Each structure stands twice: as C-alpha cells, then as structure tokens.
Amino acid sequence: MQKLEGGGIKVEVDEHLREQLVQALLGLTETDIENVLAKSIIAGAGLTAEALPVILDEKKSVIKGTGALSYTHPEPASNLGGYHNLRRILQEAAVTFTPAARAYGVEPMKGLLLVGLPGTGKDLTKKIASSLLGKSLLDLDFGSVMGEGGGVIGSSAMTIKRALSIATTLKGILGISEFEKAVGGLESSAKTDGGETARTIAYLLNWMQEQSDLLTPRLR
Image 1 (tube, rainbow, N blue to C red):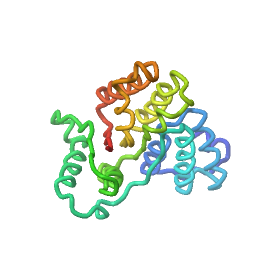
Image 2 (cartoon, rainbow, N blue to C red; image 1 turned 90 degrees about the horizontal axis):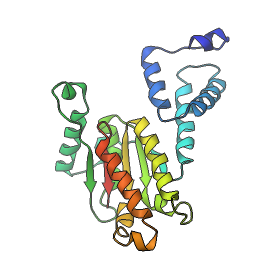
Image 3 (tube, helix red, strand yellow; image 1 turned 180 degrees about the horizontal axis):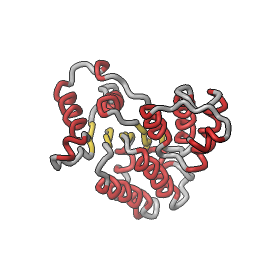
Image 4 (spheres, helix red, strand yellow; image 1 turned 180 degrees about the vertical axis):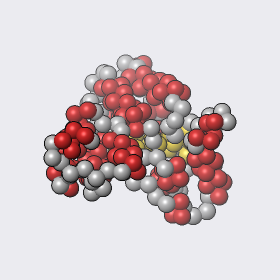
C-alpha cells in the first residue's frame, strides 16, 4: 500500500476492504496479482472499493484458464426449497469452520457426497453451501480433467495437480462434478490408459484426506 501511495496512486483501503482484497487475490500467482492489481487500479483510478469487482472478474478469467476449474457465484439459502435435513447438515458444516469450533477441537467437515438424478438440486446445493459457509466456490469438472491433453499419458495428473493447487490456496469450497465418469474406468485403468485414471483419482483422494479447511462436495 505504501509503495502505491508513494507512486502517487490514490489508495482508499480500510481494514475491511483490505481483508476483502486479500481474499479476492488468494489462489493467484505473484505475476497474476500484479497484473490484476494494475488493471483494477487503472479501471478505478486508484486502489479503492471499485477495484474489488474488477479483481474478482479477472480472477475468474485466470481460474477459467486452468481448463477444468471454474469460479461459481453462491446462491442464498432461501433459494433451496425443502431438503430440511440437507439444510441442517450444511448449517452444521458451517459451524465446524468457525474459530469457536476450532477452539473446542472440532474438526472441520471434509466433504459431502451428493447422489441423485439430474435436476434434483446437486449443483444448487454447492452454491448454497458457498453462501452458508461464506467461502468461494470452485467447480472441478472431472470429465474435463480426464479428457484434457488428448489422451497423452500424464496430462490428466498435471491438470488435477494444477487445479488442486489453486483450490488449496483459495481455501474455499471445491465442487467435483462428473466424478462417476472417472470412477467407472478405474478397474480397467491399467489396461486402457496406462494407469492414468487410477493415478489421477489416487492423487485427488490423497489431497482430500490432507485438507482440513476446505469442503469438497462430490456430485453423482
């Protein structure tokens, strides 16, 4: 901030906006951060509250460039009708991420498996969870992960590692779609793709096991 002010750039940032800016920039590389800040400063004639939406839009573009990841807006809990038990689970999950819960030694909820026919609200549930927990929502399309690279051995593993690296830094909610498409070929992976599917899923499961502050809904 001092460097910007020293350069004659208008800076109007209070503690609340500072925290919002930090959260908005999480998950970006140093180069991406510099580029995003430069664009937001130009658009808003300085670093002010007007820079925040510009940063978020640029962040979406950066995340989208990873191929398998996309940034999704949350939905208010009132948009989910019925599903009282599911609402209760999401509300309980939100509590496990609070400082008070951690002070009592409560472990944050690791994940949620959503199974159902198309149109039953699985994607909406992810957005509701994002709203209730106050965390950013990333969507990981597992079909895109397995299809990226045109079948080149190692391409899927590289894609999943890159996507999960961003998700880890963001510390939000990672929704995994089309998971069953990858699992369906797990048993024959050694014969059909040189074990690529098995390695990719193993990496994902190990990563999920290690996470303590990130919720991962899986959709089937």
